[in-house]
Length: 326
Image 1 (cartoon, rainbow, N blue to C red):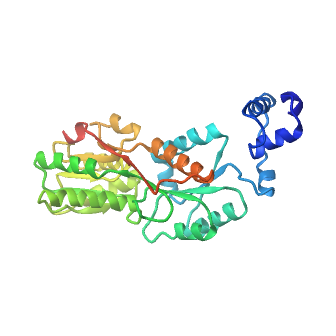
Image 2 (cartoon, rainbow, N blue to C red):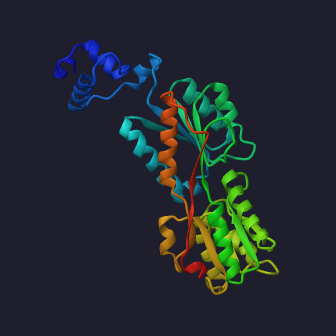
Image 3 (tube, rainbow, N blue to C red):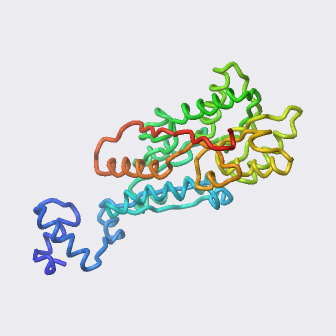
């Protein structure tokens, strides 16, 4: 590579490792020579030398049933890679079944120098991951947690206004018995959606309707909907905490001979690609998952470079009105 770029081996080493001690023109010649030769860094060698690896970790503890269909992670990972690939960084992803495996995976990835830092997703009630990573000295960004959740930077959606607008539309259409199908009752973002729904109804002088849990799956949404329909007074409108659960709800409503929205108005959350192709098309709250991933990755990379990160970053969700509520 040195001969290809017309420089010394020492210049190559300085350019590729510290980036100091060589001019911008020389760095560019060395970079181009590396591209021409198909060179890529040895992460094992960088780990042995105590240098940053250029990798970030993502440890996911979710049911395989959710991951099979969930549009969040595909878009979220796409956003992460859009940032990392431009800086020749990579993502190390591990899927784990339980809390014990999750904790040991975090420890092994960081202590054995497989990753430089983490993106923490799906923050939960009584979640001890932030405290654990802080003790380890691992840099991290928390995705989906409210401001002040931890000492780590957080990035999340503000869906309160969008949910309030949805509830107002239900109210204006005459609905006074509005139910909610919540996702995982232990995930903070599921609790936030429920609380925004409850507050919006109470601000209108309406007592929130019944709540069932669908655990973010199609089957879970169908079962939760059936439980709502079996109540002595069935709801006239249902707000689902995810589009997947709403799609399951479509099935249960159809099996019960109920029409959407004539008998029951339906709205979801996420705005997955399938939402506009259901029959009728699904009203939903759009979350920009790709933007969430790219923003989180950028914040973490800046932290790893020693730059100060914002304590909290908030992206705005928006309501997409379609025929399921009209």
